[in-house]
Image 1: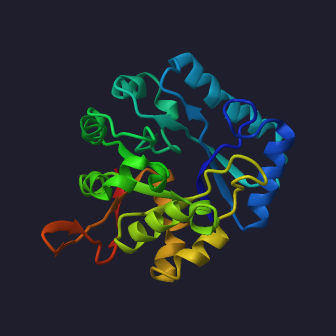
Image 2: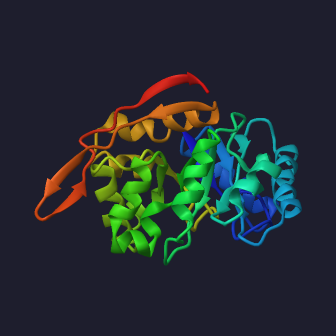
Length: 265
């Protein structure tokens, strides 16, 4: 399995607080059957390019301190949506996921979707960079109107849900939203968004078991295996989200997710 979203780099954000904690997190991941972890430190809205580059460099520092028998670590970042994101990516391409440079993990503001969001996400795609919207089930604006997210996915974005949202009983609202989006065919990726060995740990197996209650088991497994690998390789995922009318207004329902790997882009 591949964990595409994890805060395992020590002392750069609200994730691992020490090298020892990073090691513990990676040990938990390995025991769960995770072979690759993408380190995605937060790149905050006010972070400069130098600050972003320093966080990416910290990933390489972490690699040098680890034993060879640990899980593989791949560089990435979780980037807060910002008005200058296009220019920021051009000057700091290190924040893209993996070696392919074709995907970016984007965090949205939790309460409201900014007016410039659709334009920025569209411009990224014009540059052959696919936005992956992080932990989509946690945003209040999605809770209020899920179709706003569904339109973003239909326009070419990918959607990721947190494993803990599917397994933690305390996250009832997030779980309900996550399940709905899985069933509607909106979600392509499940990741841990791990922050510590115990609080939101890097564990995916339980979430796959839970997701398999609502969608095809093979598809659930692809969300932590095939699809993340395609992303890290810089290849393309093509999918179709179906529509179905219900009542007086149009609602979005993914009849199923058809994934086709298209060659290196």
